[in-house]
Image 1 (cartoon, rainbow, N blue to C red):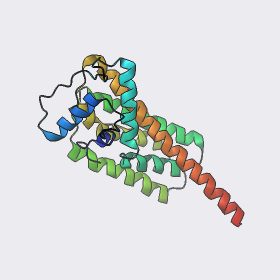
Image 2 (image 1 turned 60 degrees about the vertical axis):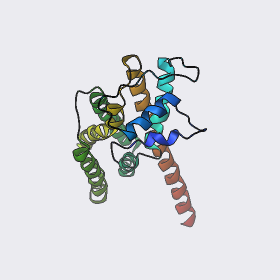
Image 3 (image 1 turned 60 degrees about the horizontal axis):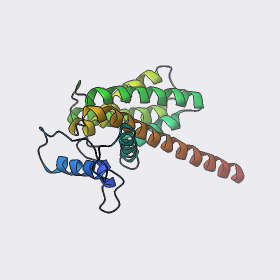
Image 4 (image 1 turned 45 degrees about the horizontal axis):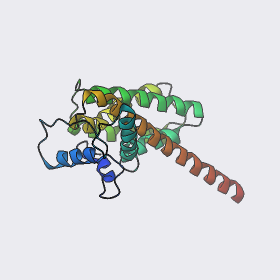
Length: 213
């Protein structure tokens, strides 16, 4: 769950990379040296031309998905905890919507330098948020009315946890927002995939249980 780590580096495999080579080079530079003065040039295609906003968006959608699957264990656990505590789709949708809105806000604030969260503080709080929801699921039968508000607060923490990548890799102004939005969309696609798999497994378990009875 370390903020300085780059799970998106897993996409930068020689000969198999699904990321732009220029982006992979900058990620490698971040891991090698002190990057306090690093400014990233515009992402370019194999022909050397700067990527369009749409292309940058697509690149960062892949980065966002990879950040969750399989790198975002903390996010996966939190989303699963929400899924397991919800007996109705409406409740689950409300909670995930609040979570999404919250981490979008803090990710944008941290990525633009408005706030500068400390990993040493954020990471333990993220772990605590997962434990809180898990323990509540065990001892509370009905979801409290204030659960969406708590999920929103926890979402703010998770957004800070995502901020390390954009805080270190400073994209040019003309590509920054397309990259940021693409990353967030990728995160949400990964999140949706987690819920979909959990729902499918729950259906299989239910059908097997019905056959045994």
